[in-house]
Length: 235
Image (cartoon, rainbow, N blue to C red):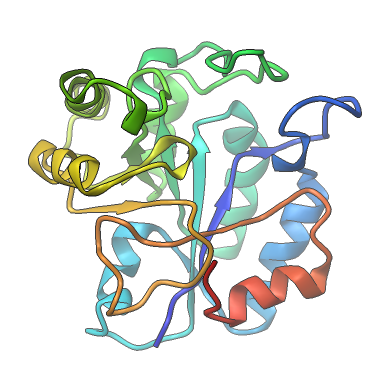
């Protein structure tokens, strides 16, 4: 079987037209509708950690993995209540150097969105959702000197584990950018699995440290959303 891993960023009203990366802002009502459709179709929404046995072929079931990159406050305020009501769990990947700040790591800057602070992050985990790592500063990892890239991965994991008080197992590559060396750094840091932004569904033939995901966009129609959930096509 293959498993859809869905990628979201912001669950909020979109910024003004012309803002870079405007497509990764999904309206709260649309997100809620997508989750309700999954439930109606018999899918169980799971965190990446909980889904690994299905991806490896050790368990069978109709599941969809729900992930959020960056740790936006809108995920805590808008997405988490929907997930909790439906009995779904999800994984949120946090940028350790920007906790409680804004997502102003991009140059030129995109719309700055508020990020979760330590209190919201702990509450996220306390409700049964998974926390994962997403580096210290959200860099383009393969473009960094190897020593710096490794430090981004290791130091962020340590900082996040100090906040949560337990080991983190999941990692998301910023911008989905990775290579064999980055995968090795992720493994050496103590992560068990990692996700990219390569389009497709995850299955037994995929590298557990480079799992594909489908990015859910602001203007995705219901049919486009369903196609991402139901078909394994990669690209």
